Amino acid sequence: MEFITLALAKGRTAKESINLLAKTGIYFADVSNDSRKLVFHDSVNKVKLIFVKAVDVPTYVEKGAADLGIVGKDNIMEARADVYEILDLKLGQCKFAVAGFNGDPLTKKKVLKVASKYPTVAKNHFNQKGIPIDTIKLNGSVELAPIIGLADVIVDIVESGNTIRENGLSILEELDSISTRLIVNKASFTTKSERVHALIHTLQTGLE
Ligand SMILES: Nc1ncnc2c1ncn2[C@@H]1O[C@H](COP(=O)(O)OP(=O)(O)OP(=O)(O)O)[C@@H](O)[C@H]1O
Ligand SMILES: O=P(O)(O)OC[C@H]1O[C@H](OP(=O)(O)OP(=O)(O)O)[C@H](O)[C@@H]1O
Image (cartoon, rainbow, N blue to C red; front, side, top):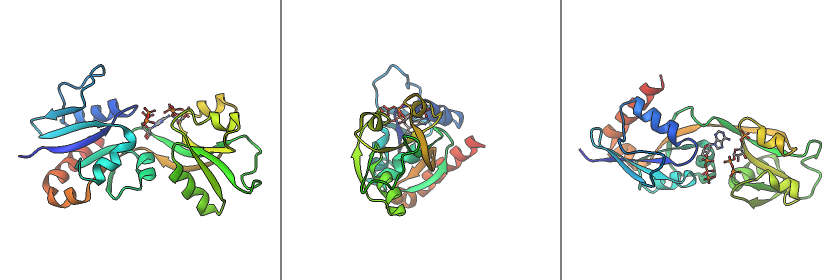
């Protein structure tokens, strides 16, 4: 039997994802927090696990470098990758929100300056509302942008709300709910149908 390749997002959801896989019997003996290793094998179930930066998982799966991927809905939406989104793994639950200073009307400015790690998501949202924006792509500490005057508002992830609160910002609009999803390469879904469906079924059972 050939190995099937699963791309797993590094970062805050990695440990829980690996625990979920282990619960279903897909087990990688040498995975450890301290290791810098990026490729692991479950030779019983013939699954090859590759550790990929979260933002890159949709690309690996769309291009067929991985048959399946485990990644946040935020990264799937931003990448607009042509993949199948199959399961909600219910990990990494948070939501997208527009945040800024309370009382700042969103439409006062001619062109709203929006800072985000997710410029495509931000553009889509404000396009739908007919509000013209300039996006400023940042890679972290996005909440700084309105404070420093780099942007009027941000589009970012909110979970506990602590980061927003502790930086004197408020949620101005709540957008999509986010959680970790299982995605599948479209060709693999057909050509490796048996293996892919078995893995989907295994994960589904683990979620129950
Ligand atoms: N505060 C949060 N609470 C819950 N889930 C979150 C939170 N922030 C991010 N996530 C989810 O976890 C995934 C991984 O987040 P993480 O911050 O580890 O990735 P990243 O932003 O790619 O990391 P890095 O900061 O190293 O670039 C995100 O894509 C998102 O789906
Ligand atoms: O509502 P909270 O529970 O405070 O979580 C939200 C924060 O978590 C994420 O940041 P992350 O920790 O990935 O740091 P970053 O600034 O480097 O993106 C996100 O971008 C928010 O800043």
